[in-house]
Amino acid sequence: AQKITQTQPGMFVQEKEAVTLDCTYDTSDQSYGLFWYKQPSSGEMIFLIYQGSYDEQNATEGRYSLNFQKARKSANLVISASQLGDSAMYFCAMREASGYSTLTFGKGTMLLVSP
Amino acid sequence: NAGVTQTPKFQVLKTGQSMTLQCAQDMNHNSMYWYRQDPGMGLRLIYYSASEGTTDKGEVPNGYNVSRLNKREFSLRLESAAPSQTSVYFCAIETGLRVSNSPLHFGNGTRLTVT
Image (cartoon, rainbow over all chains, first blue to last red; front, top):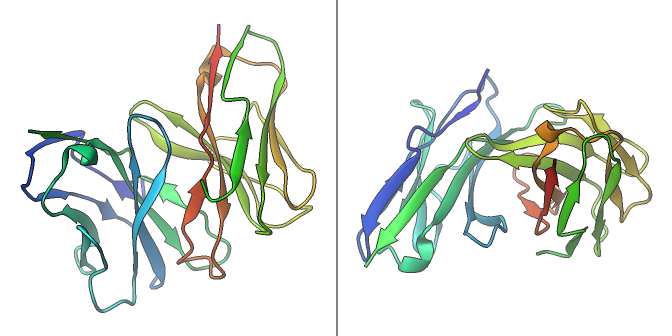
C-alpha cells in the first residue's frame, strides 16, 4: 500500500507568489518523521525540511515551511515568495520510528516558477 | 553532497552484461542505501545496509545484489542487466543518530541505460 501520496504531478506559480505542495501519508505508528526533498534539473537530491510527529510547531527553514496536520495525515510544503530557482521536482517522504524503518518517498510534484 | 561519491556517473550496458555501481562515504556513518528513480515512480529502495556486515532487501531488490565491503563502501551489482533496470541510481547515507528524524544525504546518482 502506498504510504506517501502526492496528488499534484505538476504545479505552476509566478515568481514572488507562495505555493503549497500537497502530501498525505499513511501510517499506524505514533512516532514518525516527515521529510521534503528538492531535485533540480541537475539531478541531485537536496534535503529541505523535517517534521517530527510529536513536534507541536510546524517546521520552518527560511522560505520553506511545513503545514503539518496530524489528524488529516497531511504534511504540505509551503514555499513563500517563489523564485525561479525553486523550479524543480519536490518529493515528500516518511520514516516510521518503530523497528528499523526506511525512508519511503512519494512520486513527486514538478514545480515550475515563471517570471 | 555530504561526502557521498558514486561511480560511474553514466553507464550504457547491453542486455545480459554485468556491472557494479560503487558508493563510498568519507564519513563514519553506519547506514547506507541504494535507491532507483524512474519517471513517475519517485525513489524506490533497492537494498540497504544498517551497519557494516549487514544488508537487507528493500522494495525492489530483484535483479540486484549488494556488498557492504567496509564501513565506507556499499556497492550495487547487476549480474545480468535488463532494459527494465534502465534508471537513475542513488546511493544515500544516514547522518543522524535517531532513525526517525535522520534525513538521508544522497550522492549525485548514476544514470544507467540498458539496451
